[in-house]
Image 1: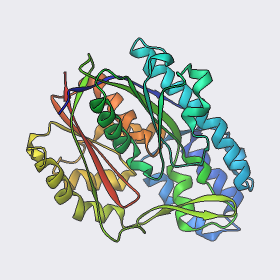
Image 2: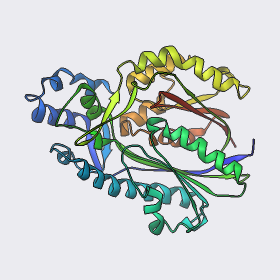
Image 3: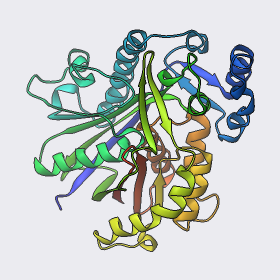
Image 4: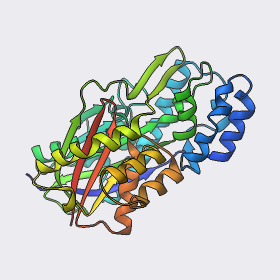
Length: 348
């Protein structure tokens, strides 16, 4: 395949810090009497492995009922700011400006933007009018791997082109307090906001070469992960059976995806995995025979930032590369579909 390189990578977080203990205390105080389920599920906050998260609005904002138009307006403002921050960082790290970008791939599933985010960012970023725009919606937590693979494919198809990939999610906008279900409480304990961006080119200098990519979607698994639409906006669909599903089903899928690249699990020096949550991290380590504690960077990012959906995987990649990217790594993420997405990297 064409030699596509990851030239640069940058991350961005919004300004408001959510401390897990404070979120739990506030949720119990405000909603405990009205929704007894909140108190019964309080251990989810402590067992999530999360200490802090970042959000586009302060905690008090989420305590009031919010309409779909209100949430949409916050998404358009907050996601755009994070897009610009992450994209500007990645371009600066590559020694480029917005006018050098030929193709922009944007992965975001936590809000609806039409025109999409990269179009709204054109003036602020200085993108050229002829830059190709490729918005990607509906891939959720898998977006970091799926979007990166798509960006690599586009860079390979047009050698010499500069491709900018941006993943931005405002998962906190799914916090619900009007019709609380179990998954809403889990979302309140788990999700944060963030963005990440990278620059890709064919045949250029970079810190890693994209040597392969693959996806696997399990039939009749639509109910495992996704969104449900309500009067006040998006609500999370998240099956409690994700960890056992990963434990049972992931390894055969990974084996098949790697086999198509002439590889096996034993050929991979480091799996870089979207953590989902603490139990999912445990299931990933078990399914891939990694040994308990192997996914240390995953746990660290989860503890600092929570589950940011698509950008999370790139936050972890950024941490791993700063500590020294091994010769061969495989990025993996699970998302609605139910789909596993993987990208193989070779350090250069």
